[in-house]
Length: 291
Image (tube, rainbow, N blue to C red; front, top):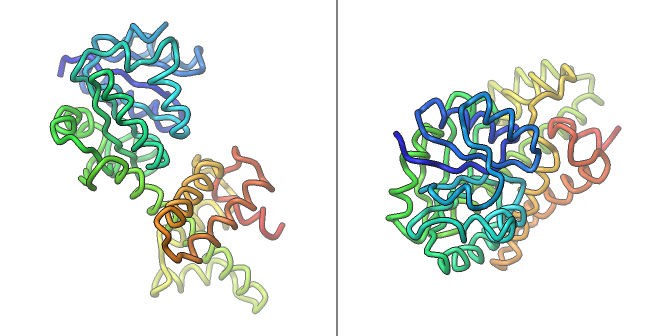
């Protein structure tokens, strides 16, 4: 592939994703709020480091991998006049961040004023799968042509691509998936805490759980690898998961759905966030509840 692609956000997930695009032969123009990171990536990958929004003018697809929808909107609409204003009509912005779908739906019409389409395509799989290009990607858009234009990029980044529906549906799916992950972490942590009072060892409990109906990604991976040995090295920030679970709870409120479990899990993660701070590894959340 020889077209120019923009990539905004070179963090823990964004760097390996952008690396894979460079390895696939795409000409990249990159932007990160940390100028040192931006320059280092550009130097190592032969990419163009953006000095201003105009540097994205020739990009046909621009990927954003940023903390939330507010940072995305700032990058594409405000920074140096906005990346969207610099793009040619027909370009596509692919927001792969964990954004609030309500914000996504509000952003689409603003991009359309510049002739630019929006695809929301958040990911699941963590840093390891970002590195080997096997992410699961949830794709929402109102414009099928925009999805088709984004696919060559998305196919480099992901192994399983799911077309979820209209604009915002991808971001809604991501938040709901992470709500389930956050709920499984919460219930597993509580089960181990209760079990300890009955003399049950964590390793024994996990062995039983993972051979039974209570198993989950958390019981099979997060707890044995990071929680029990106290490694806390998933590299997925507590603040990000707390945000995603909060988005899920806000969607329940917006849809007027009676979802007490969702709200309770959101409250638990908000408590961990308040106690430990956003930079803590998400596998440490239990410390904010009991320690």
